[in-house]
Length: 273
Image (cartoon, rainbow, N blue to C red; front, side, top):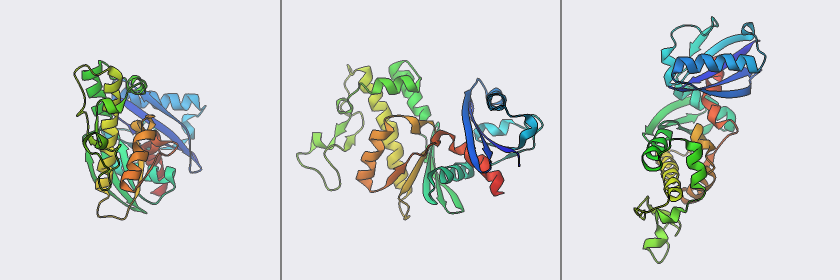
């Protein structure tokens, strides 16, 4: 059997992974000015870097918001398309080895997909994600480079911008520890340092996503949230999500190939079909 190529086509970023014998290999990410350039650049680079011939590729599976721009087969290889929410769920389920999960796909915005075995349903989303982080960083820090913002945030103190429960109450409130956030950015001053602002922006985005995923699980018995997408690579995830786990009694999982789960899921959709 040849290689199945799964491609998650974004507006400017494309992620690609090959599946051989049911296992992902050598995923890569390419950024370009538009989805077509990004897609074909990623495909060509993947074949070149892994010494794969075009005839070795059995099928190409496309997903993502940019997939709609691709009307024909990619380089003449049989090409199909997979619903992005299905790809999210299949990839997250494969990577986490969990069957009953809420997939939290942290892209430009954030979507929530319930996966209970083969029952996969999009259950909602919020307009906060990587796009929010970049936009606010442009306005407040004069950069949209998330890696730069993340590095800057490591030097910041969240207590300088956020109001905590301990700031407004002499004792813990029921279910709320003293270090829990009472109000995001409520303590920020006009002379706040860039490091504190960066820390506040990232914390706000991740806390909002985490809290929204818990709300999305209300009325269900699901307590496992699988985080996928580029934001899952932020080192601040290791601080924000464990705190939310204690607060809400849930479990957040970040699988090995979290940023490539949608591309993996697209390839798995072909095998599943």
